Figure 1 (cartoon, rainbow, N blue to C red):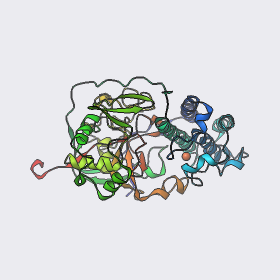
Figure 2: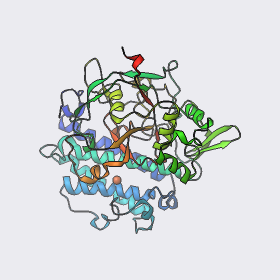
Figure 3: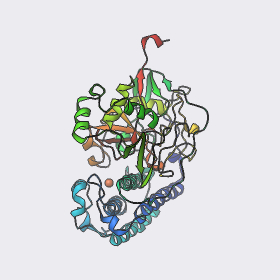
Figure 4: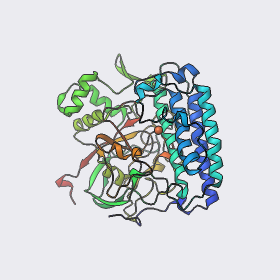
Length: 451
Ligand SMILES: [Fe+2]
């Protein structure tokens, strides 16, 4: 069933066309400022180097951002003459695995910078005049929103490359805000029953978030906040990584094969855990959400704690459902955009913030920090919703559907506000640890707790 009425009001849908153009231009400009900062922070030899087999050289990401912008905005929406058709293939993510990209005849840093500048000038030209209706690709400036999100997603990937890079710190950020208010209750209750999952009303939502559809979940309890480093350390210190019983079969073989004994970037020194964070060596802060754990580690912790990971539907209900109106909100706090007091986004702090730092971002169920701080692993495989149709191309999401990928929700401190919302779905292999992923746990309501 496809339903639209139970979604919250959407500012973008009501915007006059000139405001929509200005909004799209501002979003593109913010993304470019970030891409520039991430690539200007290091020298040319750093830009062309592969810092990890898991990642592309930063200069590949930069030119790839330009290449996608050229394909969609300059050529498709604008109908303009191709700028560099000769490099399409080099920057097609499906043609070359990340590990092979350093060996390609890539644009050098100066050429890549000049290329993205030229593409952007043409894309702005297109944005000034393109009709923003009559075609699904340009309706509500969708193509511009899609390209903005694409650039921001690569910016988060480039931020992960910075985290893998060896050497002195080169990125600057404000310190994370302190906890506000008193201690949080350990868990919140989310009522059972139907709610609207996904969206048909969000103009810049991507194909995998669509369409809005009614989903029913049983009542459950969800952790009020993501699992902290302090709580995760208890699991470590209790021998969690050496006890077979907490791990799934796949998780255990992954652990053994890779010799994993703590979250990525953690080191044991005397009696304490330390971590490397963007070149800074520091004590692991106990009150921040744990980050850089794989799905398997999240799953094992949950088993040890007598809990489980939430399904993606449970996560979304806890984040969006307003029992008073029956509506699904765009964000946990309502339908308005994220602000610095609502969520830790956009690389503002270069780390998760302590749990309890964002009381303004709390959901109707009372859950904190569902948006921002850390991506949250869910127990769900990545699939299309009922009524899914690929748009604007199958390779955006559909080719990834299946049991190989787990869904992550909520965005991290490295996700920009333009690339996150209550319906946004990320997916990755359950072994991945370089992404800014943590988790929170859930549990069923026990028979004795039924009202
Ligand atoms: Fe891409």
